[in-house]
Amino acid sequence: MTILKWALIFFVISVVAGILGFTGISAASADLARILFYVFLAVFLLLLVLGLTIFRS
Image 1 (cartoon, helix red, strand yellow):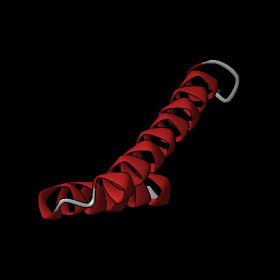
Image 2 (tube, helix red, strand yellow):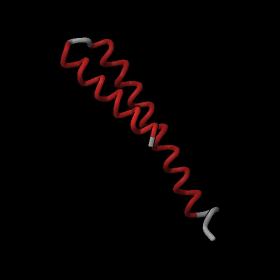
Image 3 (cartoon, helix red, strand yellow):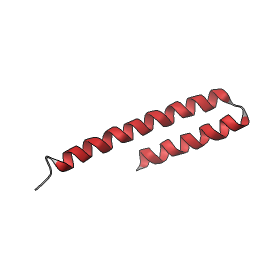
Image 4 (cartoon, one colour):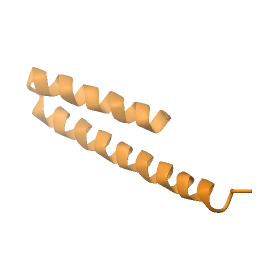
């Protein structure tokens, strides 16, 4: 959940920077939020598949 929390923090930073007119900071933090979200999604899906197959007893 820590990765997802950081993705949400960078998304909020991106929105605030966009509202204030800092487009460079907004784009950079949006990219970081997107990357962290995809990392979270990949780890979640990997653990879901492992939980349903290998670790099932």
